[in-house]
Length: 446
Image (cartoon, rainbow, N blue to C red; front, side, top):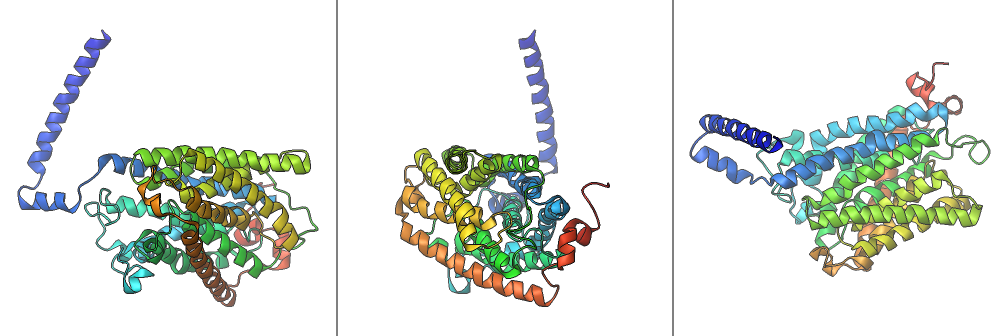
């Protein structure tokens, strides 16, 4: 009976498809118009389906993943403001990406003249971008899909910075900072590496954002934390996380979403994507375990926050090399990322006494540096032929360029914000909490 049912279902499906095909043929343009449309975009259906899925996964990383991860680590009086910063970043960056960000990052992929450093204004307001056009770097995908996928990277990058100055920034200052930073810092660096800019041209390898996303945001976070100064009561008051359950849920969502981040950056469901996926999972586990072991040795107890932080450090560290290294390389990059980030968060921050509230620099900046440099060590041409010429020196030079531009431009943007909207809330507002003073809301009514 099941076999007969399957035959009937298949027959009915065939009749339906034939009917739809006939209707489509009758409605479709004939002759040169149809041929021109096909020539404009030869769609890769499998790749498009994979990037559609990956786009949703990467958006999941910011909302709700990063929002919950950061929201659980702040004090209760600041949880809504912190979650709201991630959500607001998604809103603002989406609009700016539509207006000019995409054009500045991907408006051209010509590595010559000014276009070696910035894109163009040809695609402002997504002018000329449609479902029947393809970006030159990803010819099998509708350009609209490429815009959406890259948008999710653009969203999470400035949202990561918020962890460095959590619990002390004005919402108006935050919005101005994020907007300017997206256009002045993120878009150019994205172009340098991924759209025919000078760093990509010199052979810098960054598969999914070690430099573009993590080093870029981590350095900006450190500059912002130093510029704003320490939170009121830093080093004296209890600033323990208010809800680590939220943080672990957020970290878990980030781990899942990171599959779209890293494996999606293969742009196709192929062997490179499969290796990137496996390497991402392996590196994350290795880093989380390494951080836990380090805590176990030092404190005699491994913390849940430590395991979650170590996992994020592993995700960050494997990002630049996800599609270039084999599984063994991913494991060693994960271990190194977990241990070095643990050292940066626990000891370097303690020695230098800077207030990187949620360790944006200690995890993303440091983890991105470790991963990008080790990509030059472990890149395997058998995984990806682009890794054949990889070396640490080229990676190092590329990182210096990103660090320099991110630090200088971020400092200038912070001054602009300070002189216009202002940046830091008053001491009284900070003590009362940003939820009430910036948004007039509280987590609980009572």
